[in-house]
Length: 261
Image 1: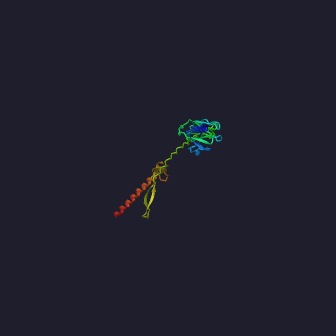
Image 2: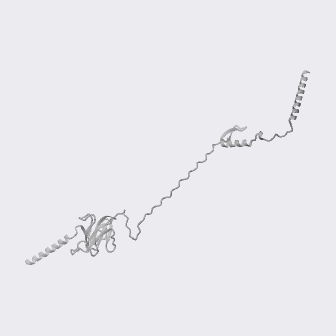
Image 3: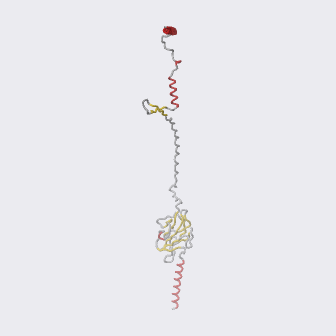
């Protein structure tokens, strides 16, 4: 009776120790979740998927890691992230019926890489299961250009052509000077009291040209040819003068004769 009791107590103690050992083997740096989470929203992590290793849609260009081979490794170590990653909000490691959520800077997990020996929670047998898939949530820096693959040509920027130089507008010639308005002089029309305005040009150049033309048209008398022959010579003039003297004397004599009678 005492032997049976002692054996039962020993077995209970062993089970209790095993349970305590299993509980203590959980990773205190992680939050445990049940199910098969595959997105950041399902585990309440901000950001988007920046790295995925699930055997179907693998995308691992943004992280540098060690281990984490699916269905083979029990541990995953992320040594660094690329410069495009501005923030890592969490790492999820799935294995067995549950998953562990690691948040940088929380529960003694370093805020920056490296993050060592990340794993899934214990399975019902108290053992660390092999990793079935894992992913990383975070944000990418939009200001950093995305690297191109070797097959793709590097993007080139096209320099915009400079606009052609515009020629200066031609200088406008000054408008010709307008002649002054002609002055009007008033003159009276015979038989009318209403003054009639006549227009006279005041443009000196026009007047001068007109005078020059008139002077050109007038020929001096000295420049003309010899006088026309009228039939009277110098002798004829003498005889005419003599006749006039004789006629005048006769008229004077007759006048005196009349006075004396």
